[in-house]
Image (cartoon, rainbow, N blue to C red; front, side, top):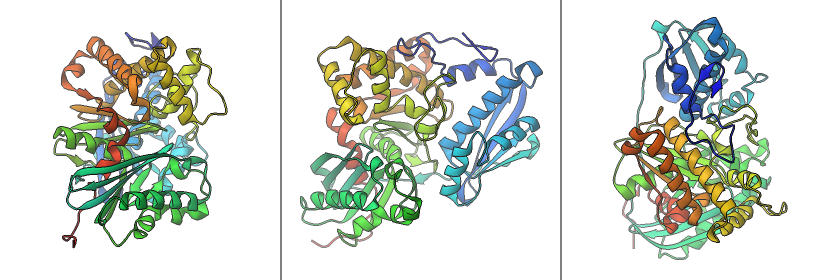
Length: 464
């Protein structure tokens, strides 16, 4: 197969998605024979900088392939790391073209608006000579693993909210409730639902010593700066959204609160259960939530929003409903993925059903042995194998834990089998290096809320 003059090989093309072009596979093929050295540096808060060295061809006949590679590579780094300044070092013409794309009225306007809202400053693309590339400056952060006392753990998903009551590391109560935050414009709806969950968990314990929250979105200092959960809330209510978890916790009492990205909590769940590091967590629910902890079980300080990162280079794909870009992770690792593939497999779903209930229908068919549903989940497993290959180019992954609504039941088992089959055949080195874990059903569905309970540190011993 060929794309932009680059010949690549996909040994396991998905039957339900024959035009799939895995970015990681194409990227490896593209770099074969490329010799012109370039570097990309991404700067975020507190002077932290991540640097990547790579190569391009730099010849006229490969000009479009060079730009496609660099444009997708830069976009991946932004959504993996986060930042407000990108240095393109050693390639003037590509830097200039990227600078035009990354404007509020350019091709990458979504990123510009998104990161400006997070960091409170415009996103910049700077052009430097290769020898003036900034030096890397990273600072990993410890997270979670605190189990003392009576704790509430809350997981705010896009289709369901989960809450757990945890006493000295033992989960004494867990509850999962369907809700619809993404279609609610009144922040009071979100606040009331969160408080209701907190109070339910609090009623199962003698007291509350701490509250931990796993939430979709980019989290800075316990504030969801941007999150799909609140996508319909008007901008003038942004401050209410940013303080929503701390205000809800205050309804329970004056206790420590910590809010973390749901993907990071997924990774933490795996690290705590396996007692290992270098672990990535992928939660497949309303969207794709990704987190990572390093070999020392610390966070990198990255945003890990791979839901918006490039995955498929097929330019005829369906755009993401929020970013409008084609080929990003949310289209391949979410309940909408299953719904889209079900239509291709010939499964008719009632259009009036909400997405979470459509997924349930597909999963019920899977439990009944329906071959069409089998094809849906096997395709997601193929996607996952190629995601492992791509993500391994940016993260040191030794363990992968997959969670979320999409992985429930026999569908999750089919996803794992299909993924392992592709890895063993096409990427044997990764198959030997990475352990992929599909936890038991309870952990898959409620593990993030229990793990979230361990996030805060209790500064003093609570009184009995």
